[in-house]
Length: 259
Image 1 (cartoon, rainbow, N blue to C red):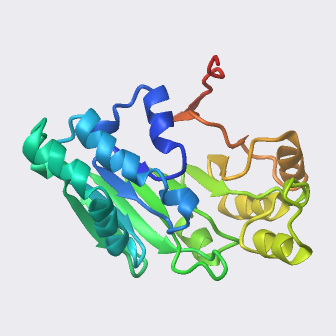
Image 2 (cartoon, helix red, strand yellow; image 1 turned 180 degrees about the horizontal axis):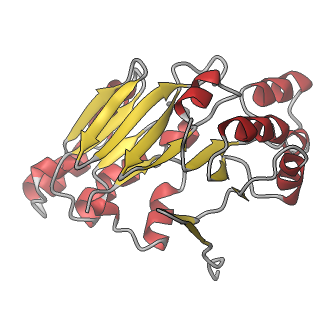
């Protein structure tokens, strides 16, 4: 079974909670290099190898800077890698190898076993380059927006898609943050993302079979603001949400984990 991973903070923990062996992830697609989207990469790289029996290289796609970042991660953990590979456990050398691919334009970046992954530029304000991804397989498709404000390029690449996973931001939640950001910072954060009202209009234009939010917490306020302009199938952002895409789309909600 082929498995790929679109990185986000706490991602490896969620994989384990979902019953997906971390060592089974051999391909990673990065939308951009903000820390909250790459901070789990050391865990995925090292635990997937030393604790997850990955015996093949980890392939990573991302914007310019990805290759240097992954090389520096291996340098940062050079002692642990050498110890586990050459001296102590003798884990397979291939499993701690990284093959980095830097995405520079809208293009198919992966095609294997009937599945294709297309990268396309999105608009994350000054955070450039930033990409979304479209996955096509067996006549079905999913688009992942990554972080972006309303992007006409995303609208073009999302035409005819089954599932559109799109980011959203809650402006009021940002204004209510306990660190009391300045008005300028609040405005800048909101301007780099998509509000519920903007997302609603985008969903109307794309008309996916299912729209799914990411990035912001799943709140009634976000859903209510979206529903003022969009009446189609919609799911809020939810950890461990599982979506089966076929002739029918099936959504499985996992109960909250017991503390």
